[in-house]
Length: 312
Image (cartoon, rainbow, N blue to C red; front, side, top):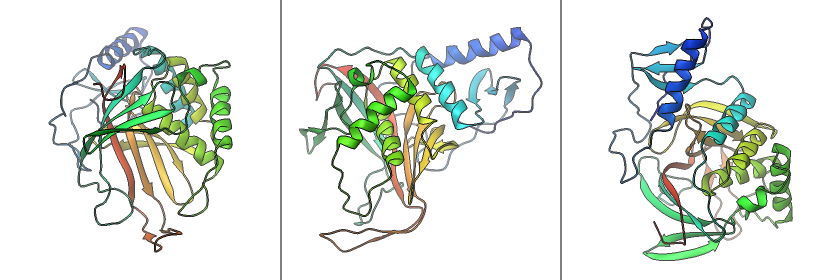
């Protein structure tokens, strides 16, 4: 698992042999299976991270290597992030689900604030298990030991997005059409813009669906074309892993889709308010949400295809 210390860009060109060696090391490390049983017992929860030292640079590639282990791939723009993530999607074939199957997801998250406030308590962590249907229409979770099945947003699955054309414009058009068909109602103020809704829908798809590589690649490239989407380096997920994120800043909040900075696999999400906001509830007193209030913080621990909700 990688942490980012710095990015060094002004380096001389490397030889072809050295470049091939660095790339081979990066790919080999990226394909090593991670721990699957239980939570990692690393003291990295929250915002304080131990930053590793003794870095050596694999010159010319943007890959920073410590003790022959890949550290991070630097990106210069959101378009470059989209392209690198898209290329990495083709290397991660994953398990191809059958119709009717479900994706089991175990994640670490900051729980909702207990003081009646708005947002999450980043000083605490809880493990959440959930299941999403391959068709994208249902989500199941355990509530007080009972399995609750309900509708899933945005209601798209792999089969919908895999219809031709599987292009950045094509997958975004399918997602946009689904959003336009919905009747959206906000209990806390004006509806977000279509660009923000589109980003959040892709954000949801990436975090909850088992998507084929060509669909994930198209979505990554498409994210970079949505107006207002940028990239943010050195963003921490709920497990303390540092990554690079696709970010969207709306009228009052920023949301990050966090990817591993080496192999660009999905790590987790983060959301935070960027300015004070007053909620406009119709059935409760209004509430002032201060800038800097964390709205969500998650970390993907495990995911696999199963035959039905409740299975692990």
